[in-house]
Each structure stands twice: as C-alpha cells, then as structure tokens.
Amino acid sequence: ILHLTLLGAVIGGVINAGWYRWLDAAIERWRGSVSILPPHEPGQPPTTREVLLKVAVSYACWAPVCNSAYLTAMPLLRGESLAAAVDAARRSLGRLMLLEAACFAPYNLFAFRLLPLPLRAPVQSLIALFFSVGLALLTDDEPTLYEEGIGG
Picture (tube, rainbow, N blue to C red):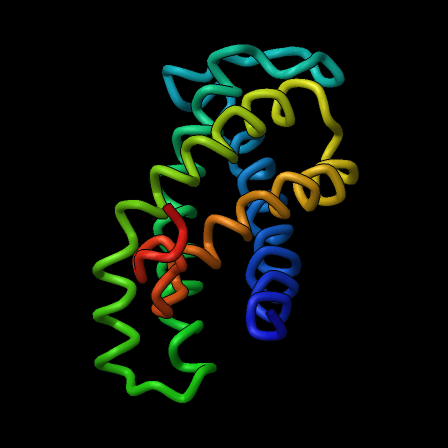
C-alpha cells in the first residue's frame, strides 16, 4: 500500500498535473493552426472536437507512459530486478490500458468539458481510488483465495 501511495502521489499527482497543464497549453497553441482545431473565442467552453482530441491524446500518449511507469516501479520498489519489473509491465500493460479506458476516458470526457483545471486533480483523485484497486490487483502476484480453491 505504501508503494502504491508513493507512486500515486508522484506519478498520479505531481507529474499528472503537469501533463494536464501542458496538454491544455498545447491545445491553446494548436487552436487555429491545426485544421481539426478551428479558432474559438476565449472564455468559451471547449468544443466537442477539442475534448475528444484531449481524451485521445491523453490516452494514446500519456496513459501508456504513466501506466508503464507504475507497472515497472511497483516490482522495483518491492526489491525485484529490473528484468522482472519490465516483464511484469509487459504482461500487465494491456489489461491496465483497458482499466484506464474504463475509468479515465469517461472521466476525461466530463472533466475536459466541464471542470476548470484547478478542480480536475481533486476530482480525478476520487476516480483514482477505484483505479488503484484495479492496479493493485494487476500488480499483486500473490495467489488469490479463488486461485487457491478457497473462494468458490
């Protein structure tokens, strides 16, 4: 739990907040100069196209990096070798990306449209509680009660 908390604070908190600040600034710079982002009036809510672009860029660019960092760091923090950590990340990344899509893609559709940047991190922390349970289950190599034949 301590490892997950540490990684959540660093990767999911500090680094994630920086990513979203960068993404918002990049969208502002791209607006009007990229054909899929027509200019729009300052102070207006983001367009649907802008929201979909942010969600897609976040999922395609940031999520694999962030999730790979989690999956590699967890075994390293438990004292496992780098080779074991990379193997664990390789085995779990696909499932974790599905969890990412289920938890954060819907949240980002809502947040990028309706939440100002300062509110996104606290609200995202609530979503991260559920995501962390899934993350812990994916990175826990201990056999479950079900796998041992006790749970059903």
